[in-house]
Length: 370
Ligand code: SF4
Ligand code: SF4
Image (cartoon, rainbow, N blue to C red):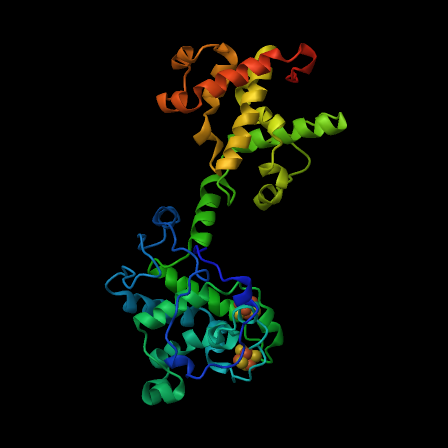
């Protein structure tokens, strides 16, 4: 999401009254904190979608393809021909307003264009203008308007503020499914490379790695190894997770969101951080106590600085320090993965940590489970 968020005192002042101006006359205002970032061109390309490019919703120039209006018109026409429901939904709304206050986006923002009926009207107005005789003749009187850059910006802003939950359709006496209209609107936007990164990148991740977080297979195995160690430490039971087992009786696929939602994936007690380093298996004895101290320090430091752990110290350096256990700062130059900058800033501290770890009595050394 964009960087600035509305303050709580602003949020409780939501005004649900109709605005003074007609909705067609109310200009688009892409509010900070309300819009999602534009899709990353790499993700758009990965998905094989057209017109991947860097663009910014709050800039005037969206770097659209030259014939974007023609592309949208043609895409609209094709979808009306292919999907009867879409055509029916464009025609039958009687604007009764039963759906108006049912959308959580309207309730949460007070923005009339977030009423399901008006969200759909953004598309319907262009439909009437381009595809109905009466719309072509009567224009605005019939609720028709031609496609323009402002209309397109409205489409992008409001089509991606619908979660396609279909709540509104439950209340519509005609069963109009605004979610389907939103889906069509997004499809049309995708034809000219307009998406949001909350969708494009997770979907590209799914294509690439099989999960929306983009976790690589070896990282996933690592994570489960760590969970298994944790469970064993707490219960004394060692589990044997299986991956890609041929001839298994049960196929169990967890949603990747489960990993995302598990607090244990992110909150690691610093004293357990060494268990997340796969190469620990090559260390033994007092090398492990040094690794535990260094990895714990790195975990705390990364959290304090709000930076990825690898930016503080690479795993390779942690393993080498644990193996070689340097006692003097000048020996640090021989450690793989330690840059001159790190040696200058953190060298003495690392030597101290190693020294203190080696003072611990043997009964307090961590044990690697074989
Ligand atoms: S389907 Fe979209 S418009 Fe309808 S209630 Fe859900 S979020 Fe709102
Ligand atoms: S409830 Fe149905 S018919 Fe009534 S305004 Fe909403 S979409 Fe239109």
